[in-house]
Image (tube, rainbow, N blue to C red; front, side, top):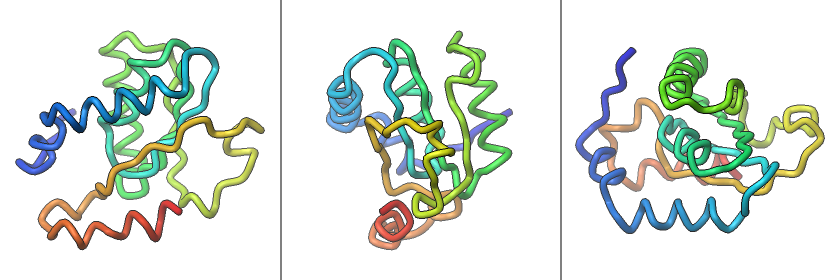
Length: 135
């Protein structure tokens, strides 16, 4: 399985300030049985949160990637020795979620970046779809 990142995505993931802001967000939740929701098509964020959390439970929406994204996340989680089933993919919009989707747990951390499959070649302001689908 292969994941191809555009030069813009690689630059964002390589940016020290961006990585520190994600690290601070994850650390702000603390360790333990926390629930994190990743509300975009990023495959990097769920893996990052799972790696940084002590007992990770991550729900990723992956609206554009769906089944292909789930397969990639499971393979990457396995390769990085993460707990089985620590990342769950729903493929739903935030407005469609119910408490059953979160297993009656409150979401401790909602994390996202404006990245959606198929939007790589678009101008940055065209990614504002994030605000409409995530909130």
